Length: 225
Image 1 (cartoon, rainbow, N blue to C red):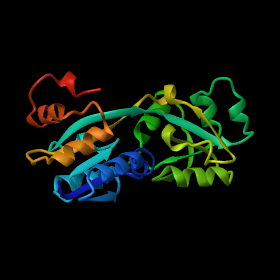
Image 2 (cartoon, rainbow, N blue to C red; image 1 turned 90 degrees about the horizontal axis):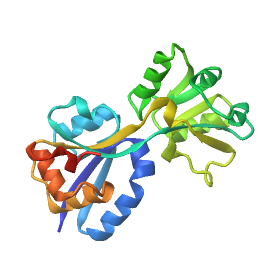
Image 3 (cartoon, helix red, strand yellow; image 1 turned 45 degrees about the vertical axis):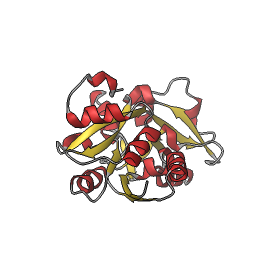
């Protein structure tokens, strides 16, 4: 019931997806020292491969590391954020063409589903005017508030009660859904409190599902989304 658990994740996950999970975990395991390292998806994967982190949580890059066992957790889409009263918000249907007419602020190419954004514009034969790329949604929203452009962020990163002066529209159909995954290093011993953390983050990932994935056997439908 004691030990250390190191979570490696991105700013978006740490800021918007993990707070409730961490709060519940600490209440359940007060003797476990929980640490969180934030970095790029590539850094997160490498920390976990090297044993410097126990659990990797990210949307991009984890599937590029065969040393990691991948467990899908949940899916999410993007929203566009704009200052209140922006002409785009009055459009009945927002399209890639309408987005391409405006300067855009979105994630750095390594983060938060940016690859899907790029591919969608490429398929449509459009060249978006991305004036600023950042590693987290808070920075993106700050510059949207200053009038530098429209923001494309993870939908979970918009909160109408906190993001005063900004409005958001769901544009997930334009870019498709992203899957956030947990990565675990192959061959490692998983402690009970680690199973508990995974279950808190993704309720479908039972101990049995995690063990099946780590062993590479069994019916994958039991642990895939």
